Amino acid sequence: DGGITQSPKYLFRKEGQNVTLSCEQNLNHDAMYWYRQDPGQGLRLIYYSQIVNDFQKGDIAEGYSVSREKKESFPLTVTSAQKNPTAFYLCASSNPGLQPQHFGDGTRLSIL
Amino acid sequence: GQQLNQSPQSMFIQEGEDVSMNCTSSSIFNTWLWYKQEPGEGPVLLIALYKAGELTSNGRLTAQFGITRKDSFLNISASIPSDVGIYFCAGSISSGSARQLTFGSGTQLTVLP
Image (cartoon, rainbow over all chains, first blue to last red; front, side, top):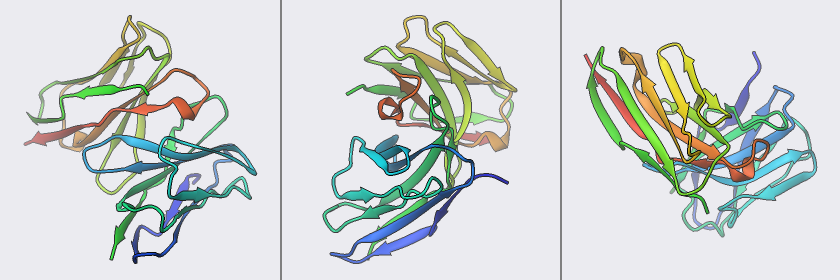
């Protein structure tokens, strides 16, 4: 079955450490997105990519970085510059011209 | 940026009852989306609305795109236990750009047996 796979499901970060969240899709979608979700809040856009080797900052990009070397993959790095990284991170993908309709099951990041 | 006000924040209803939730915006949107999220999972798209006044159904779910283009509602009829979850609205001023997608804060639905 086609879908979006996020890994790991749970991740723990130490102070001053960078961590990378994986997102892989086999839906042949051109566009991919990263959102952050905090309790009681809606999803906020971190980064998005509409094509390989291109990506754009979303509303809360500070402290995060991404790469898009392959169509299927869009990893997110949470850097030590992100002072409040504890959250649920969601990856999504879509075809051009459509809203993100397919989400992965998320990665929950916590601080040790 | 755009602000989306989703209400109610939470609902406790008896199985079999109908449910209604809505979103209002300070800006005009040209797309409204409704998602459902269950614990530990990603949101799943329920209904997409692309035209002012549009009324769309998906089984027991019905959603409408407000005429003013600043609001949308979602109704669930004859609720069942598996309707439990968080329902999000999302709006966009562009049909093609995720950059403009704004999410409401969600409605937590609990269905009591």
